[in-house]
Image 1: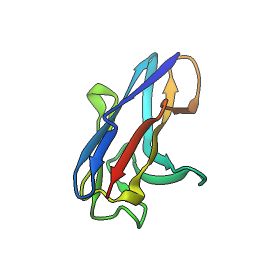
Image 2: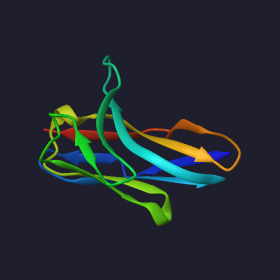
Image 3: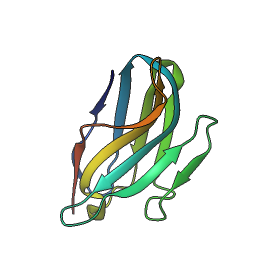
Length: 120
């Protein structure tokens, strides 16, 4: 079994910063791609950023230069540092990890979601 626990969301004024964390636990053998998605009310879930096992990163155009994704492999944790927040960043943020366990092949696992609200 694998569990993902997200933390770090909240309410912030425009221009402020927040840091999201997503920690995985369980019978983990290897974590490949780690990513963050978000879903605003009435909109489809969209990819925000991802980081590969080798450390390569990719960002949505809307967050480039403002958000930074990173990972700590020793802690099985992925982070999303969000700076210069805008009201349009308001959404529920979900982490998504591609994990191979001790007993099965690679699967996608989702966090429970954390609300980020940015006021103008």
